[in-house]
Image (cartoon, rainbow, N blue to C red; front, top):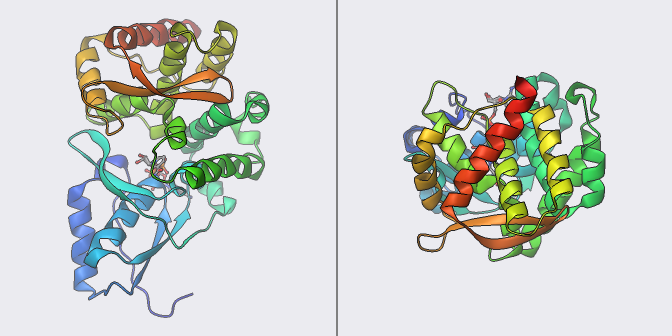
Length: 306
Ligand SMILES: NC(=O)c1ccc[n+]([C@@H]2O[C@H](COP(=O)([O-])OP(=O)(O)OC[C@H]3O[C@@H](n4cnc5c(N)ncnc54)[C@H](O)[C@@H]3O)[C@@H](O)[C@H]2O)c1
């Protein structure tokens, strides 16, 4: 434990993952006279990890940092892979850098105090990791019916290993790493939009919606089979609340997708499931099909709430 440390606290929530909070963090670092030989320890969820890592990486051209993720989502996903950054003008993670921490410390004890909604949010990335890379793991994941009864280390370790293996093979997202974006093209747009409304969604809740929509797009583009799609959809609708996608703002959602950093030119880039455990990256999503996928989500998922 370092003898000489100072604490910088920031308010919780995605709405604070922005340049204003960074300014406050950099100012406090400056007031503490930190040099680039200081070490920044990011203790918190994905927001702290992404933004703390970004501030550490840019302050005086970059100091070392350690991630101590305290949410399920950050333990299986956000703390691994060196993507750091903040949201800008409703576009998620649109300003940032790639830089790896000196160390990531994952301790499931933090989950004891994590609200059930945050556990459910993190679980979305566990679902995604199994769907994109490991059919056997998916067959274990889809048996989970009660999130309160799960022995999390049993699922955290395989999940973070999937992420780690992908990012090691493709650290700068030239190919394979794009598989991790399954559910995120539509999910990020929905998350960015919802953030500005009275009913914001947690990251994983938005990604769960994105996985239904992008699963549907995978199917109608001749990849994922209907039976597999419906198993995924049923599992997600049994696990997550229904958040009706407002069709009247479809154009706004599509505009957000067009701003996604994964795109080339004006095309919307997506990763589709070929089958459970295999992904087709660099797919171009057609805007009419995206709107169709919103209707699919609304109809499929509403059924279980009427
Ligand atoms: N860098 C990446 O590769 C990557 C990957 C996935 C997600 N993300 C980002 O991660 C963020 C979401 O992370 P998150 O879901 O951890 O959200 P979060 O960081 O907002 O944390 C969720 C809430 O839980 C609280 N909290 C944290 N740890 C707690 C604990 N142990 N007990 C009780 N409360 C606790 C936080 O204060 C906050 O209110 C998004 O900004 C997303 O873009 C990044």
